[in-house]
Image (tube, rainbow, N blue to C red; front, side, top):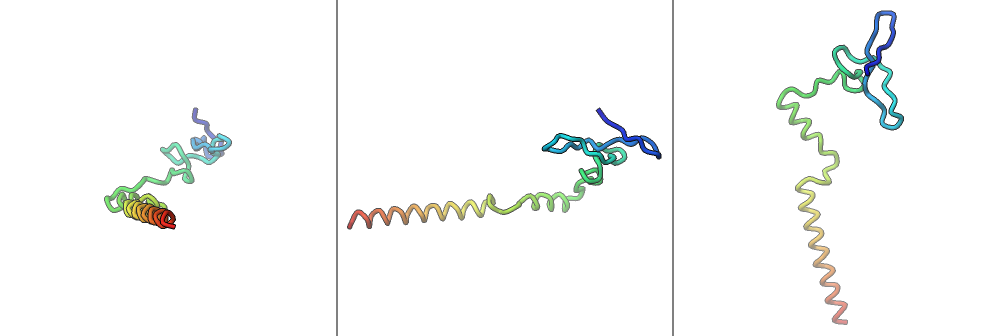
Length: 95
C-alpha cells in the first residue's frame, strides 16, 4: 500500500524503503517515477557502460580474503604447517 504525503504543492508518494530493525517506512518523498527516495537509491540508474559494469564487478572485492590467489596461499601455508608438525612428531619420537 503506497502512502502519500499531503503537501501544499500536492500529494507526494512516500519512499517504500523500510528500516531493518524497527520495520518503519522511510518518511522521505519518493523520486518521480520511482518507489524510493534519493537516499535509498532513487537517483541511481546503475552502471550502463561496459567499463562501469566492470568497475562494479571489481569493487565487489571487499577485503581479498577469498580471491583465488589468497586461497592458493592459504593452501600452501596449510601444507607447510602439516609438514612442520610431522617433522616435530618424528623428532619427538626419536628422543
